[in-house]
Amino acid sequence: NKGINLSNLKKLDDSINNNYIYETENEIEDIINNLLESDENIHRLIIVNNFPYGFTTESTVSLIKLLKKRENIKLFITKERNPNKKLSDLNVLLNENLRIITIDKDYLWNFSLFDNIDNLKKVFKLSFSYSLNSEEINNIINIFNESANNLKVKEVINFDINEGIKIPIGKFNNKDAFFTLGHETSNYHGIIGGRSGKGKTVLLDNIICNGANIYSPYELRFVLLDMKGIEFNEYKEMPHTQAFCSSSNIESGLKIINFLEKELKNRENKFKKFGSSNIVEYKEESKEIIPRLLVIIDEFQNLFTGNYKTDGYVENILIKQILRLGRAYGIHLLCSTQSMGDGVRSSFLNNIPLRIAFQMTQDQSRSFLSLNNKEAEKLKVGEAIYNEQDGLISANKLIKINYLQRKDINKLLADIKEKYNNYNKFDKIIIKDE
Image (cartoon, rainbow, N blue to C red; front, side, top):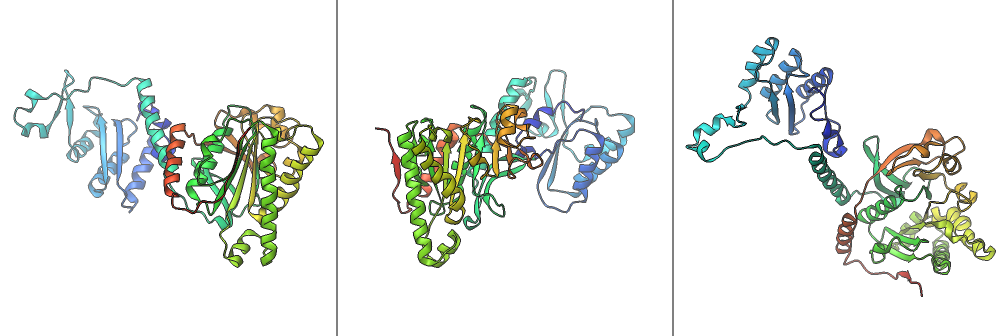
């Protein structure tokens, strides 16, 4: 149409409007001709506002042909009472394929079918004299977007756990974006950086919730360590949680590191027994169900306190063992931090090509991604740069992270708990501060 009256609909989630909002004559002509030539049997509703604005003689002829030819396509149209003379004949043809509703000066609407109902107008008046203001429209759009996101969360996507981990986290170029370890990539670990309040926690919620929704507890389990002591508590009793600690106490955090050390040794011994070089071979040869472990450490820099002994122990387990051997043993590390200073040791960055950056300063961006990559400074809240090639600027992918509200998370966790209620329970490590 004139390009203004439906502009609010561009705020709808991509999965709802799919960017099918057309404003110019060329766009309108192309889409109607494409529909006319297509033989697909999908039901479509075309809404045209202020006809004939945006329509040419050619596109109007195509629209009439479309209505005559395709029963699966319906049209809802608002039109000027007296279109220009150029379209007057075509207007008559168009009207023959439409049911006409008119409005009088008192805002009363008339429809031919009403005439067949006795005394209808005496007892019923159809009036549309009220217009939604911009705030009301935005509220309605937000409701639709929230519903769309809820559907996405519930949707189960099947990926082969033998190929790695693949979890939907947002949108890239209007298509689903995934957090991917393996699956034909060379990355099996990741690191997240960014200022507080810019979206890191929301990303982790997506990874944990959607990961548990896609994979069973026998395929994927989580080791969750939050060194701030305030996150992850809702996931403590999740069926997929193998080990849990949310504490700023370094001694508590070290218990999780100790668990990882034992798990690495346990898997090493098992794999040696069957001569297996990786987790897929081991499952095939031993016939044992063994899950991948995704170790998520939030504010991981707090594990390093300046104590030579403990720092060396943590670095040995996380860097020298998990980062080096984790791929084969099915143990994957995902670290998150808001400190891009000394806490992010070069030894971590040098071993993790997959970097996910939220908004940070230009200097932090250069340090976290790469020296010539300052793009993280430009990010908005909820946006992230997903980079799988050591921060190389040409490998930047701008992702809009799916927003999960707390009620969405709680509902999903309840569904997951019910879904896996009959699974055999396994021993969990739950660390509690004394």
